[in-house]
Image (cartoon, rainbow, N blue to C red; front, side):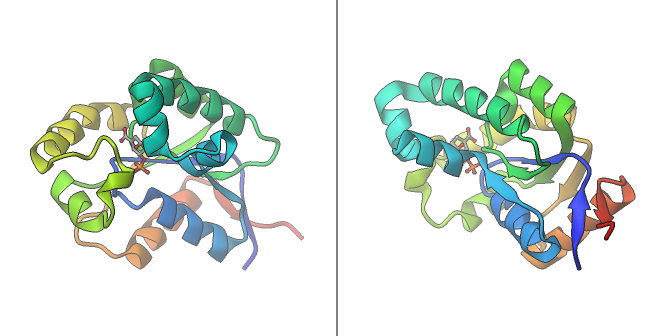
Length: 180
Ligand code: S3P
């Protein structure tokens, strides 16, 4: 079935929430373009996220992240956009998210996130589980502040989560059948 989105859909949430996987699945099922902010950064900088952190610290990464988000949010065609877990930290990013689309928060706790992330070396901010629990709790109010909808992902597989997200997008009038 061919469908379209009326505005950008941003996927936010803690590392391991399934943002990229879910965005990609919806993109494939509905025939809509999707884009991953971290992948876009990696390609544009020709450098991994871990290398950006080790060369310029989190500060450099956040600067690039905001520039990239601003550029992507302005694209002509609405996109399914998966964001890095820390995108909500900057007030400027939160403004962009709120003003340029519909925001889906995929809620995951640090323990489940840890079990989903096979290679933690690619996540410089996912160190030990205690620190991850604290970080997730600290960020939760920011995710909630910008979210138009929150989907609890605990104990659900990617098919269930994708189906819940598409239902919510249809209900909100963001995902619609394409006019031929
Ligand atoms: C980060 C999450 C990562 C990546 C970077 C920082 C964070 O993305 O942007 O390592 O601050 O939570 P994922 O959420 O896709 O793992």
